[in-house]
Amino acid sequence: EVQLLESGGGVVQPGGSLRLSCAASAFTFSSYAMNWVRQAPGKGLEWVSGISASGGITNYADSVKGRFTISRDNSKSTLYLQMTSLSVEDTAIYYCAKATGWSLDYWGQGNLVTVSS
Amino acid sequence: QSALTQPRSVSGSPGQSVTISCTGTSSDVGGYKYVSWYQQHPGKAPKLMIYDVSERPSGVPDRFSGSKSGNTASLTISGLQAEDEADYYCCSYAGAYSYVFGSGTKVTVL
Image (cartoon, rainbow over the protein chains, first blue to last red):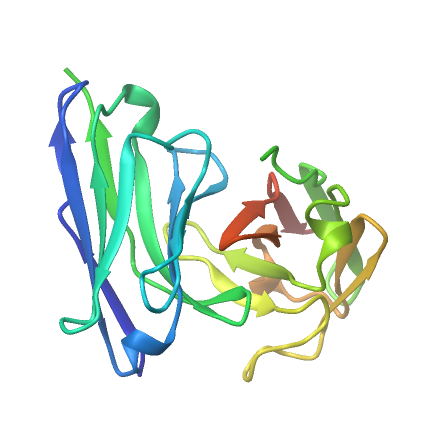
């Protein structure tokens, strides 16, 4: 069964950096686009970033553009999200999600990032 | 990249039908046949319920159906059951590997 396991979350001070990872298994990782979606406490889902199967195309929500970088290592079946200049507004559960076509068919369990002084 | 507009809440009795609307623009909902719907129970990850406007993934009950007209998509739950009580989010592909989610709708089974 498809599994997506996020790691790397935790508590970070405002202005700090953090790198999230998402280890994928049970599917051909290099054949699928991947995404990061976040959910602030008590709020709705917000798409954060997406990357094509090869890694050659990336895109970002305006709220994170210039601060976050999505990448992938297809040899390790792992997706990454490098987050810099973090603010309290970035506090959220971050999910990685696999795309099939243009829908998100499998999601990880989520990883909490807390930005606090 | 403004969130798609959904009603904050809808409710219905067991066995009834409820419909959730999702309104966007010609740059997202109206421009693509790629609207999807996600169910989220408290403390859980979202689950894909509908993709490509009206397609159901394997394992999703046929009580769930989707449609679209212009810039508005809809999710209908027929024969409402207690386990359908959850938050529901629409999502539209918006081009260049980007997406926009709806604001979310809480479905309450009375």
